[in-house]
Length: 125
Length: 366
Image (cartoon, rainbow over the protein chains, first blue to last red):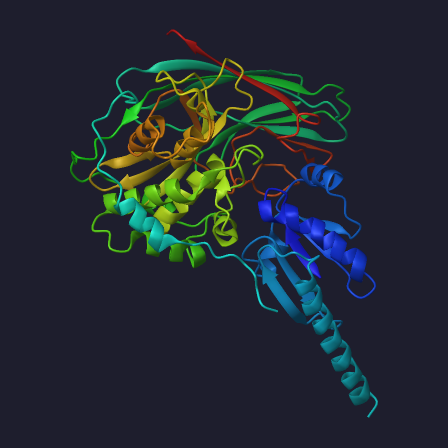
């Protein structure tokens, strides 16, 4: 899960807490990388002191990564499969700790796993 | 996955609301009038508490000249730096002092003293002045998107909805202004003056922020509607003479009094001042606070700040996407706060613990 956020973005503040809970619950299945868009290190550090997370957070200081990924708004989350193909993408606030989102993710993971099995079979032909 | 992005773009409803506004009563108290220049001295003192490696700073200087209301009048400085020089941004002409200290300097410090003159503005939008000129280069510059103010996508879509049916440029500008006053809000939790990421603001459906957000939104929507517009980044330097506690400096210390305003170019009137962000500031902050839009203080501010503003404010510059020479960090969306880097790391200009600066302003006689 690649998650783009900024500390000034009001929905991002609420979302990153639920993303942390999501990571705690599903971190064995889904890796999370948070990308801060366009802010100085000190500001992000202060934010993370108040809202600690256990997944890695990196800086996109000049917004070039957000541009390359065609991020149109914050927060934006993109879920990739093992081959780095986009599985899901959402722009806007999402409650990652909700059952509804958890179910959607589990379903996507199940699809991924079944596709992975198919690939394995194909590779073994 | 079904997306849950909130889409609260109620442009149609907002435009209807704006159109339904009552005609304004005769102007009462809040009536800035041009005619009297006010001269100010601005002192910016900056200290870097924890220097390491290469330490440098960039301090905005008053550099926006406009006939009739804004005159930068020079800068002096005192510093223990190795070099200090005035640099002018090539695209916008924004000036700043670039200061570089010798590595090992234990207490990097600089004080800049600037003088400038300003005055109130008032454009009577009932009395066209005849066709006003704007060069092709200025028109192009003030219609162009910036890094944080795109003029396509959701900005264009929103602008089109707001201005649909408008019969003149004045009406387009007015509709955008009223839509923002009705739709946006001042968020007291926003750090500094906000970031001004207009597309993100619109997409989030949460159109809250401060002047750099709300007035940048005006500029983006106006540009998308084909109206040249610009943000002016500056500083409140004196109290309001009209009793608005929220629209002026509280005292001579103006370290946290940054404020940006906007202008829109209208063919029959020239550059017209607007400040929808300050209308929302009046709503939030004028005692007793959280005033309704029907409160007299709000209605006066709302009427006045489309076409007028008070000369208690400095315009530093109108620059966007400013590259700081010698900097390791990225371009700035705008240059309104002093900036510094220590060992290649940009400091947080809003964090008083790592980056100390004090700005004072006083009115002077000439």
